[in-house]
Image 1: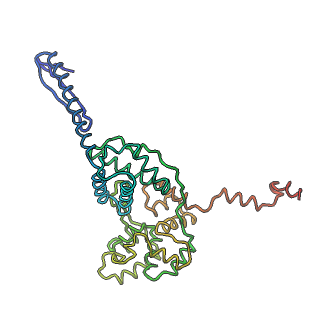
Image 2: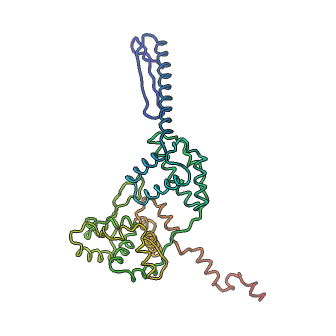
Image 3: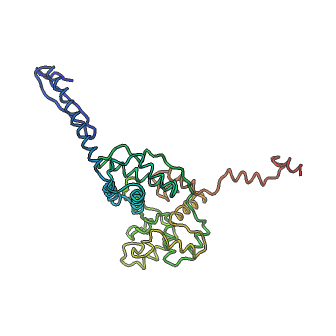
Length: 362
């Protein structure tokens, strides 16, 4: 609305386009109605330009083909996240192009019906877990395309409801089985397993440890993680257990000028499927487990020996106690309610009268 400025009237327009910061336009006029007319015309022109820009952006998004969308997103994913995360996203696109659409298909033709058909096929051929995992990856990829390449902001994959899943808790080996594997392992394998156990580190973090990040004076081991929000690499220090200190000190004497604690040329470092550990479990005669199973085992032993949730959170290096609580839920073997039921079953009937009738009938 115009306002008086000396003997003149200043017209003022504020306009926020669909994408971008607020725009401000002003102009001086001799008469108020001239300023009002200018404001109306300016707003009309800005709205028209914004509609045309949205239309042009939508056209660009519709003309982008699925193969190019996938290629651009996977390039971004490879530069941003871990190899495992990147591979999961790559496989989702591979299944999409193999089962449902052509890479040369414009993304504007990928409708909710197309998304539903693809994920339903995956659910029937595989299971709900796989369908939902691909749904999650394709939703993220589409949102990225909408943000950076003007694809439709209505995400067809997000409109598809999740499928029922069969969720099995991650297998956590009993400590006796882990000990049996340790006794079966050769000296180097034992070193890897002990480092994993005492730091509760993930595989990708364990094999990245450098000697410069092992501080014997402070009694800490440094681990780099990429599991935080945004995919950034972050550095954490964990306390060094006495048994791990002794093992690392022995290895340090043999390391020479090596940069990494674990030799990067070894097969076990490059083995993404942990086949060496599976073979070692078979040799020891126990059920197979992986690095994450050892991580869960470390957390469960900490809990069972009286550590509180903050101790476990520090060990696992979670930024949120909610994540730690999920670990605790999965690894808890003892439950006071179950123990109470067991105690009640073993208590003489005269103390609670639960079985008096049944005993009398017999």
